[in-house]
Length: 286
Image 1 (tube, rainbow, N blue to C red):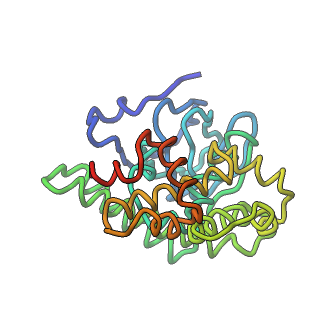
Image 2: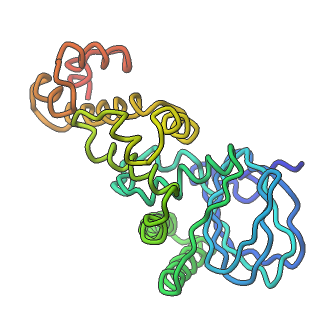
């Protein structure tokens, strides 16, 4: 099976991103992405999408992500035209975007791709006509900027990419949140963690939101995020504490409380273990 690398499409190591239109009159053989995530928007026609060992139909308006190390391909293509957006899978982790508080974002950009890889999960976003037109306009502008390669093009492309991510995340929430048992239930629990991490959160409360047992919820969460729900919450608290240490004059004790750690000594121990320095030393080095 062929392994596809991002440098086949772009040699710009400082901007690991590629976008283009793709028309497929023939089948696309099974392949694996080595070092990029691919966002796919179906612009016209239909096909069978094979992921790992299973196939399912896709058509105009469908949107899905394929993570690296996931085998996929297309067969039975009919007037099949798509937009491919290839980007570094760590892109969203490197910046603080409030869209990460959205359940739709976590469902579409994190959980679904991981479940597709691990469980042959077949769900996808289906855009309504209005959202489809908005998405088409955004990607058209992105491709024009990418091909034009003018000064400022990369800034505009990333601005449009984030706009696209927000639009798709919102569309996912509208289309999926009423479907019982959908990924949206799990994503809603993650969204709750992202917005309430400074509070005391029980795993039993999160699993109840998903209508899953604690064990099942924790297992699926680990598959998607490669960490436990408890450690995920701790990470959010630590990132918040780091931000307060850098950008405020609050005392370490106050920062501990505002970050969800009600024992400042415990907070200091955890901080030193994670960052190999004390909160006070971290602040002095900012």
